[in-house]
Image (cartoon, rainbow, N blue to C red):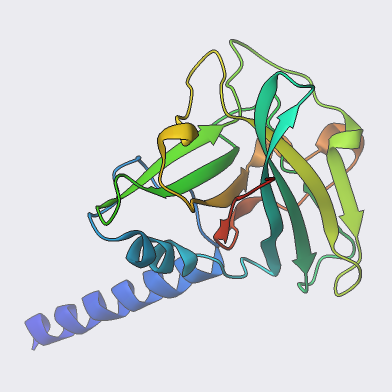
Length: 211
């Protein structure tokens, strides 16, 4: 009888953990080596992570490869976050590629390693600071639940001091997904804010190129 009871409790614990994970929203995968598969399979698998987390949902409407200032290639993504939860109002630290902790904001690039071959995945994230960093109240945005979405445009350089992505060698088309994970360090208490914290993962969309 005790074994049956313990087994039932174990199953209930697993179900409870799965449900709580769904409520918290997604986080960035731990590495750049997803299971082998085609690009279409990979996009479908990662696209399932695009869901609402604690009332908030991150969506990309456009992504394009842009030559900025005639010198630096950037991927320019147009993002928005809508909220239908209980916070009045909803405040969040906006996606940013400025210095930040724990790879807070990242672009995950999905591409085909070779024509008809396995899919690849690589990330470009905000740089980590060598020490403590300050914050600005302008880095936060606020809206009321169910009202106009918070939106913005993010330029992500394809080459930094830490790494370079070789998009020129990738098969076309290739795709991008934005992840944004805020913690207590972005709560905004120094500005008398109580900002939303948690993990958000956008939809996967194609990166377009100007002809």
